[in-house]
Length: 391
Image (cartoon, rainbow, N blue to C red; front, side, top):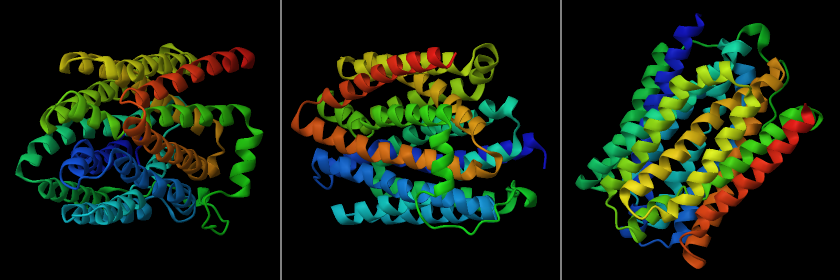
């Protein structure tokens, strides 16, 4: 299997699936608020439930894929995701909406497997570019998905759910017929799969490898900082600035455009010119500016500009850190280590929306964003110290 064609196919698979994800996410907080009258903190719980399931199943899916291959996990999860969106279309209560997001989180626990797929078909010199394709797929999914979701919301929120289900089912069909297995027989794990979140071997490898451990810590902190605004960004736009679903979709689309440009093209040039450590510091700095400035944007244009800084930082950080994690992991544990990393990130996505929703409702609407800015600032200082000490 040629690396280029394999990367193209996994990119298309993830992109189609993320189209469905992108359609739904921007309108989810406003749907829960306007239609179901769920509190801001309750919306945080809904958003966090998705990531809670990923926290549990990302490392499990990663380890299973180390043993049986990547493709079976990917196609199973895509079909599950499509079912979750169908349930969303009929959600008329907190419980049904929660069920749909729990199932979506279970199906969405395939990102570590997609990352392991890329690790299988790339060498270290092309690893950052390959990981950037996942980020670019996210970015493009958030370019077209939110705008389409904003338009479809005019015809009813259930229509948005049907469209999301359709895209995930299309991704399922595409992966079934086009995606080839990337894991070679000689690289398959011979250990019996343990259905637990963590394994001793994986934890020991992370604990002993200082660079791997710190890189995973950076990823956890930046994801937590970003997750503070997963539900509250749309609520800020809707409740504070009175933006429509269409305008909110455009904002998410803008973030997606910038992220796709950075991760789809510029990251290769940047990684060739600068060391990973410098890219990480630059990415954290841009994220800090974006998170801190969002509640003070004032107008649609102001928020759009600040969101652009946030997207630049995220676009640089995602592929760079994932590449660093992959480079430091043993080849036979790629799925397990990346799964553990994604699971830790999923826990950050659980804690972030819970705190963000609570802070938005009970402290002030600025607080979730300021929390993210404070944590990224702390991570910036910590990273400067660690990288200098490493040299």
